[in-house]
Length: 100
Image: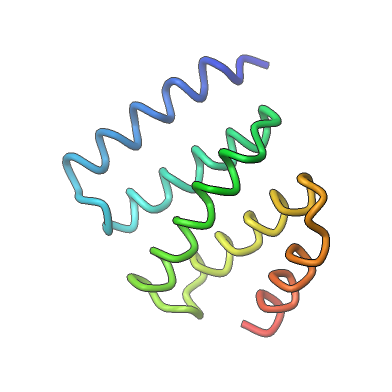
């Protein structure tokens, strides 16, 4: 119930992970995905989608398209698309996750 505080903390975690571990470290990617999910929970779908699209691209590049974290990131992006009314984009990603 304290989503604004959670977002503030997640933003700090992402910044720290980026600084300490680097932008391509799996923990950094996970932290960025968690922040995007927090934005989604707060109804900040535009921010959630923008960040999650970047996370998906980075996971795909760093971990590979079939890695479980990449698939989870795609599924989370699909949820954000659906919440924003982008049903076709959500369905396409969900199908890709099922095939992956």
